[in-house]
Image (cartoon, rainbow, N blue to C red):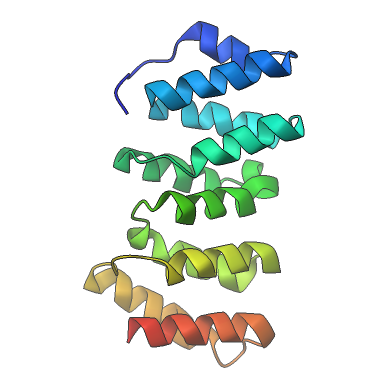
Length: 168
């Protein structure tokens, strides 16, 4: 992503009542590639926009390639304000292929504590990681799983068992 400031016209267009204007703004963001728009896109997605706008946002989030965007995604995933779109955000994370391995313990917590659909997306993200995290993060992740596994049931137990096998 090149540009490092937010164009106020694009920002206004994102929250327009005109669906075509919103879609054009999303397309401009996609073409310009500026990670500073991510929180605005998260906010817009959180407002339950028109279906076609939602699809465009999801498509853009799933195609982000700027490594510096990982922290923006993680802040949103951890923010309770975005709980209603957490599943979509995590899905975009594994689709865009960025390296979220350093945040493995957070995704394990989501598998353990969140609803099934969010847990499934978090599992999918971990399962699709190209690289494993460093030894410290691996150790914390394994410990979380080993602590939870005796009490886990059903799908959560399956997810945790599969992740532990991948990490060992």
